[in-house]
Length: 498
Image 1 (cartoon, helix red, strand yellow):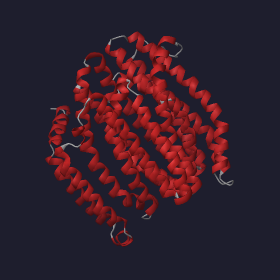
Image 2 (cartoon, one colour):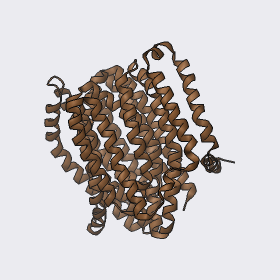
Image 3 (spheres, helix red, strand yellow):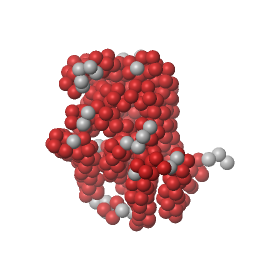
Image 4 (cartoon, one colour):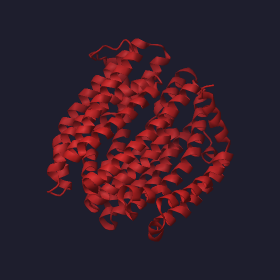
């Protein structure tokens, strides 16, 4: 197993997520002050409507990573080239057709959800959002080709560069054009991402032509048999977010929808720090399945220990920071935003801990229980969210979304352990107990403190930073004493120049 390459991929993924998070942080601060939370809610709804198109993405993209890694392990470059062209042409045709059908459906949905005065603005940006999403999904096929060759460092550089371009264009266009300028910035960035991804992939696969034109039916069927199963999984994942936002817009209003979107972005940013770094194992495990399948359970256990070690303190920090982020983004300590962050953090923490099992199932093609868990999450989210929102309001909708996420992904985790006879005792690493206690204690003490109105008005930003440093030190001591710290530092030291 190429340990150094895995580490390089994970580290650059970590850096890419941090950089993208910084861009997102400044972008949201700028948008709130330029167009307001209500218009941000409109933008969020339009993106949620167009995100249905991602149903045609993940199956193909994940299939490309798996099968490119498979044929690269066999040194079959001709088949790899043909595979990428087939996937790209299939994606372009499928997403293009879905987008054409989605425009009238999306227009109808936005008309039903939005107030009449806001509908024309949303309709004006819908074509730009669909076109940008089409280009982004085609670019994701090319990025998956890079990932299948374990050239994830190139993909990460591309994604980070695109985020910087998007921020610069938004700063330039939004003040004069509003939401339309934001949509135009997104479309230009998507076009640039596609062009650069194609250039990078052609350098890695010289057999690729300048213009893709070859389509191979046997390769398509091989990918399709895998992608069809994964497409059901993607359907549940992609539909969950627009469903939650639609319920919030109906029962909670646009302002609550905008606050939910901000809270979701904040939590997902920290989730991506770990999940995307762990996702680099998909091509590695797919290659191991061809060469040495007996080592896969060991890879799973090592991956889970690292994820557990990093996620507990990280999620304690994001919860405690919620009041501070609220003051930076909104100019006030908003209790709705803070409560949404706490609810979502609980659900996505469990999701992260289940991710190593999810990744191994994707790489090996064992998707039955993954599909069952995602279907359970979606159905519970819909039923509990509707009745909760109707009778209890917006908080119940978000609680239902978080609870359904926990139960659905626990099905995936438990089924993996039972199917592969992996001991459940490894789910709670004994040497991580002090870390859990420190993280839980820090969140329980500091979150109510920062959330209280008197503390928000009494303490300045430097004072709040000092108190947060105390939390950092509280968690740092058990992290430093943990055996995983020494192992990770040895990995990092091995990558530094002499």
